[in-house]
Image (cartoon, rainbow, N blue to C red; front, top):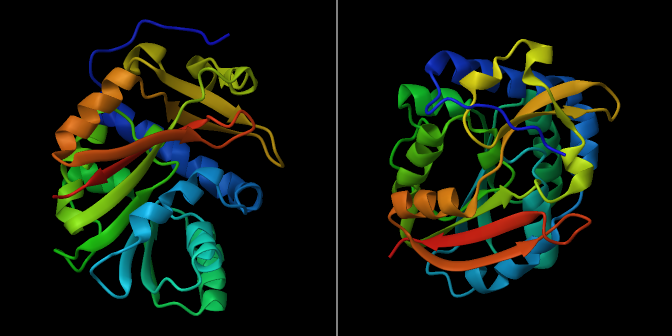
Length: 261
């Protein structure tokens, strides 16, 4: 069972940076094991075919925010061999970006990779890419939202999504619905163990462990349906699709597809 605490109404910058540092440390420690565990495509990606067809731009401009080892690019090349695309990947971990570079070189597609601290960009209101004003046909945000501390920062991210898209461009986002999965609930640990006051966390925030290869901890947030609706509303984009997929349970991620009209 998950343990519930008395939460703060809003998170301060110090706590946000502390949690972001915890996440960064987690990926530094586990990069090799994590990359290996994320070498396969998610089943939910197969539902994206309809959203990749009949695009007006050739090649398709794709931004993979939180690209990790670049496995989504490999999925696109294998699943849609006739799809022409240029791939831009952003991630905060150098090891994973190195793996992504190896993957993309084998695929023979135009690409650029960027090491970016997403939370720091949100806190300092800094652009994600140096070439400001760049637009994309498809933006993917897989396995990222649960690592962004505070509702306000998540809302800020969503509010800026439209600026990344061409007209009729789409963004695909996953929300990790780990609460119903008992095997994941068992991974929860008391924040006090790593020196974090649980009262400084917000509702539905958790610290969970990782025991594959090395022991590590990470901050995760569970997005409720109510919050999800608030974030989608903040984006100003149109919700055009939603579905559940992935994991042993087949429903571990909730996907939303938003379009800029």
